[in-house]
Amino acid sequence: MVKLNVLTDDDSYSNLSACERCVSEGGGCCTGSGSGIFVTLHDVMRISKATGLPLDSIAVFGVVGDSFAKGVQESDPFMFEAYEDGKVLQLIRKEGHCHFLVDGDGCQIFNDRPAICRIFPFSFGFRKDGTVKVEIPKANRRKDEDCTILQENFYRSNGKVFSAMNTSRGVMEKLCSRHVEELKEYKKYVSDIALGIPLEEVASKWDIFV
Image (tube, rainbow, N blue to C red; front, top):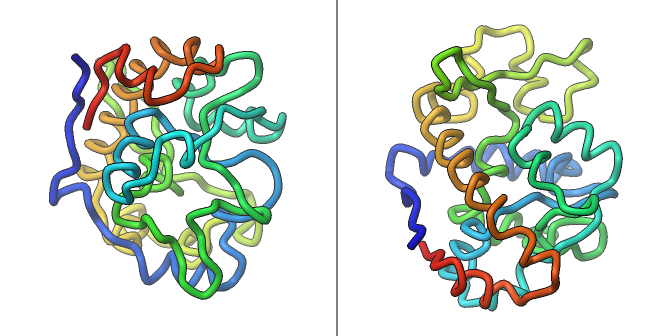
């Protein structure tokens, strides 16, 4: 039976106002061309629990573009290792963006959004003892940075960037650690998803619940 840590008050931080403003200006991480937003089955089940939607209407096992694969290889190595035939489980897209992003009304699942959405724009690595460490990406030039919040805080200290996201290094480390654990589980069941087995059946087979 696989039940990983549920969200707590400590990691349900909200950067909603900043993200809403970014979305109104084009929303770099929710919109654009290419692959969708990468998710684990745990992510999908949390969204389903909050919305009542069936799992297969939330995510699809789809192709990952080369540029996205390279970015994930660098920022999320566990997910990159879990690719099957160049595909990954991802939120369904509609009209060029995440289908939970509604024009003029923002993200419809913000409080239940996937781990990768909660972690963005941060990435993570590992210390010598194997524990997770959070990393803040730095663009070569401020204008190259996709995230509006990072653009505005590019020249500030790391602490200021965490504050701008209404979070802290400790909270993000906890979230990234849980993400790593869920990706380890993902690698166990992804072959079943690749075979076209419905997500509900995969979750039942592997006793995954949230």
